[in-house]
Length: 313
Image (cartoon, rainbow, N blue to C red):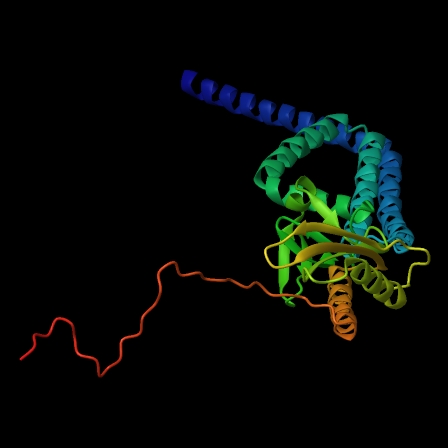
């Protein structure tokens, strides 16, 4: 009888516990349902805010891209900036949506995780990000642009492209050089196209028998007659030294040029014109001559002469 009573008591206790657990579960579900009902307006408003920010990001991105097309920035940089603006708008919408739903703890956790992830990505892609920001800087500043003839990092050529990774130069031999943007920003850059004028420097020499006044007059007249793109530009002529075989002079004049090739073409044309003018006026451009003096007289021994070392028979 005692064992039967104990079993009935045990069964009664288990059924009572199950009933209590079920009541607590119903109470918990009811609380959740009440919370959902109460938070439903905020949830709908948060979804609306995020959806509006999502669609607004596309519109703003297109507007930014349209405005950037009026600048001289590279297309790749323009697209990247428009995408960054689009992502910023979406992130702002997400933050507002989480704030409306009172999920401040979730927002704090997301921001902390994004900071850690951003730090890790930044350390891993340090070189790439450096080239990217350098590319943006090169696209914004006026020191260099496509079509300029520049010299940087021991390379000379025409700038044909500036993207998010490197700057492309087309050298005079028609070869392409790809220089990381970071090196272009950090090292010295010489831009030959920053001005529309360039100075051509030419050196030459004339014989010692030449009339130096005539040489100066002929040379300067040739340059003034054939290189008059810049009105009232000065032609500088001055003798520099007494050379081994000639009296040397230096000639300087200005031309309109945007590339180093323009300077080379002008120099070649000037050399041909000066040579023709010198020939017409009997002005000699000497070449080096070396004179050898022998201190001892030279004797030529004939083949039919007997050798002094031979003995007479």
